[in-house]
Amino acid sequence: MKKVLRQHPARTITELRQKLQEISDCFTPNFMPQKISAVIKNKGDVTQW
Image (cartoon, rainbow, N blue to C red; front, side, top):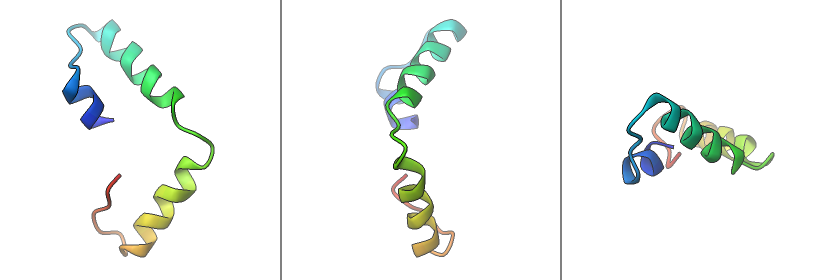
């Protein structure tokens, strides 16, 4: 999310909310298990997510 927001910064709170909603709508149901697996694999250390 940070990367996308940095590429196209919001100028107002409303615009920020809209952008966050658009980004979160792109997440698939498989997104969280992949993210959790990466964290476990790295033993809680930094991941690409």
